[in-house]
Image 1 (cartoon, rainbow, N blue to C red):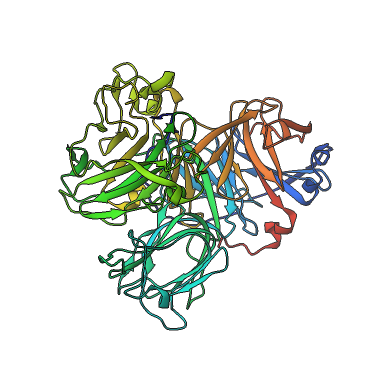
Image 2: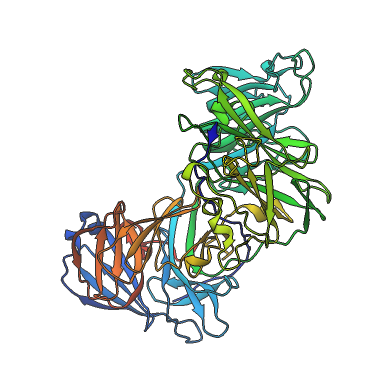
Length: 630
């Protein structure tokens, strides 16, 4: 008899909010020479300068580590003479004249992006605002060129030499459009190939656009006139959507990408797909993120049926089921919108390749279209058991389907669908395992014992191990899925967690440093004092004397350890070393990013009450660069 273990938790979605904006300016400088032991922390500092902004006075200062010189540049002011105090976040893009800082405007309590000239301390507000809530940390980063890729493309039948579909597997096997003609013999499920690949060239079918790909969790607007070259560590499935009784392909061909690390280029212009390699500014802001658009829906049987046009996202919060404790049972998932089915996490009939019971949740899929009112949305779960107990389970042929739960066909007892305000099911865990409440605790009001969701969300709970609902094994922990609705697919690209016990909420935003426009990429469970990153994917932030690691790809916040100083408002990498400025002792600390432990002895630089620090390679000294901020 299969039994169960807990799935992992997830985060909840919020939508991005774009904005725009203007320019910059100039003032004076004064020099003081000090001695300090900063370069004993890391010799790489010899090639750098550090800018710091005094929180109380608004004074901008600069410390040159080679020569140990402290320069007071001046008080940050605009053309009208207004002094900018309370700045706790800044970033620097090499070669540019200005720091990008964030300031809470006391006149309207809104956060503004402000250019601060590194030679004069002159300030200029850019864009309108980032809304209410103080920005407490910022950092600039350039992506490595790889992006997170998922989704699918309908393959163009074009077989010209320049645009023909090509797929190279990780073993070197090459498939072309010539292999995907009608009458191709495929499996009963329509799959031609599923597995790892290193190269794909594909031109989307049609005259308009296909928006079925997600790049860094955002919809990629891809013109069907372009041919896309995709390289990297790819997980792909090539399949046909209509198979006749003789097992021959008679429909459309698709290539589906499971979660992949990829580099994308469009042929013709040779350009890299937007977002793949450019400088961006990231910031943490104290704010409870804005709710998605409410989409009214009914629960009909075991499906969600919206009453207005909608987009949808499915998040697998977790899957946990074992065969009497001897091995993990694979669980595969299919998503259905009306009469259209999707297999975003791999082939539904391939338990080895597509299981979601693998401790890699949460995983997300945004459905590619906007669907008409009355279209039902369901998630189908299937469990698998070994055909022979001695099979290793390493091959798909070792498994046979055990149980399928499909709420779109009937109102089944093996599926529970919950929405905001529903009572929490009173179900004990099987064989002394955790109760159901431990699996969905992020979505429970413990005072009222009711489900807490946004009005556009529903949770699906599956029993994939027994049909006997009076059995103690029926604990509905085998698969847990969250369906989120919105007016537009773009509203579904982030996740957050509204855990009432987590304290004040915050968010991580990606800011266009030229316009001030921004998009929210992660909602956070606590307010952080600072922010640092090397790649724009993994961030470090302090909360009091604790160091956290924030990972955008899986939307997690992991406690790394305790740092040596308290109230470390400035944080940034200098080379490979994570540095932080502690305002209690006004000292610069180096720390191990893996543990938070101190490296060397803190340095006293003669700088005080710094809300933010920013390192600048001397080779990028703005005094040697053009004055424009491009």
